[in-house]
Length: 227
Length: 320
Image (cartoon, rainbow over all chains, first blue to last red; front, side):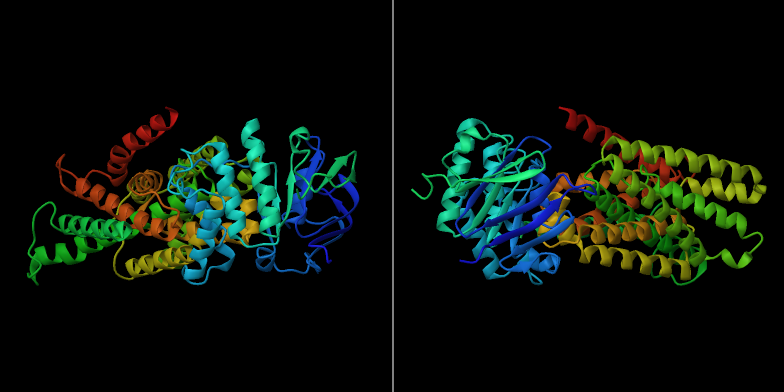
């Protein structure tokens, strides 16, 4: 099987490298949890894969194509990125957030197909009832559901989420990981989630990438995965 | 559908205001073709009303773009010092035109306004990329305003009495100085700025999710920001060059629009802002021309009296 994400000898950082010699692969139906202390380079790794930060050295391949050769517009159809930022504007509805996921596919105006993808993502995340709520009225858990629906609407094989559990309480965190696992297996996605709470994610991940002292270690696949 | 009803209502309001602006302080029949009254209507009130329309729309659209770009609801061309930058450049040009008279015409003045506005926008962009977009850029703008004000004071000191009075009147804001070719040029450049901004509004709206997410949605955030700053430079720079630094319209109207309608369709928001901005400029012009105090009240006095209390309301509402 060809890897969805293939990282070869990668160094990351802004100007000076903070993590070096990263070699890792991710396949279809993988849910990878990326752990490490604050400031260890988790965000930087995700943002480098997303193309937001430049690669210092080495290469990143997505479905066999080098990201440095992919135009930015094409990249938006291959990978989706969700940041930690919690948005609270009082004029953005949940549905609007999901709709942004179809942005890379918009022609002159919204088509039937764009709408269908948005509806699918909304149904999948079970947020139909709150679709008209404004972002200043929703809980952090509901916001994250909208965020996931948005990346689903972007129709990419690879999904990168930077600390989605940062503001969530324990039960919401569990629910989020369960949602991510289900999406990963039923929608055939590859998902990488960064977090610094290692304990609550034990049985959810297919493997762990841990950053420590400038090195990335890959830990065994969890035995309870895929059950 | 609701969106179109609102647009329709706003256009109606604007037409009503245009008619009122043409009919104040006293009604002149548009069927009169000769005499002082016809001259007053066609050569004074009509260009003044059109100027107010264009300037109001340009300033509020600039304000909307700046507020969204910096995600700061108190941003605007006046408070960020953009208008002051344009003013200073125009003042320098007018002084300079004593020696190079060919500079002193509509296009030269608008170009100076555009350059002055763009320089300040560039500075604001540099500051915001380093230090964030909160209170710091507002303070920065205020200080830029003070510095350019001081330099302009120096120019005033050196100016001959005739120029001094012109400067002072101009700095109070006026819609009645733009006629004939200048008006056409003003209208066309405003149209260019607005059309350009209109085209890239969807990209700006994705930046609501944060610049990084917008980037991964395929939006070249750097290029979009720079293009929008050029649009803002054209719109607010040229409006300031022709009408003087006009306060409050650019800051207040985007907030009024957001209270009126909640949508992420920024093309629509741009239209609402343009129409409402034109409406506010017309209202200010009507108050200014109504001869309440037996003379024409300067435009900036009117915009401040209308916009000031509203901004205070927005500020206090946010705190709660």
